[in-house]
Image 1 (tube, rainbow, N blue to C red):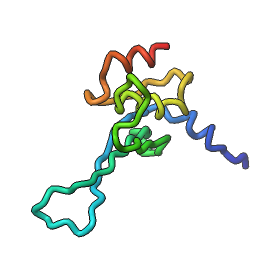
Image 2 (cartoon, rainbow, N blue to C red):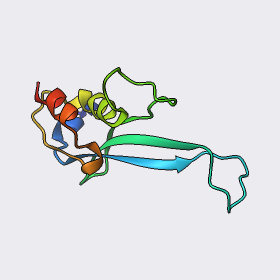
Image 3 (cartoon, rainbow, N blue to C red):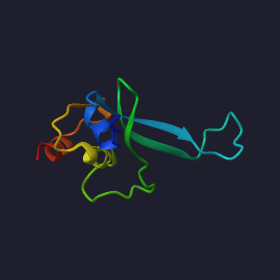
Length: 106
């Protein structure tokens, strides 16, 4: 029986989607007080099998590549593992921008 490698499994994933999840990281904050801290995780996953292809937690304080918004940089980092495979990747309005379109075009 042939063993399937991770690269072969990822090559079969065709229903890719990018989304973000936000969670709270607080220390015993009273329930009526808004949390001071949050963690945003950007995720590239297969929407049919729920297989996680890649994820990214951007650094805080607004540190990212100069000239690119954080969501644009997150998408570019996430799609590195599947670039050149001619897949369609679905996102929501949060990730739509002209700079991202121009970066993905080339």
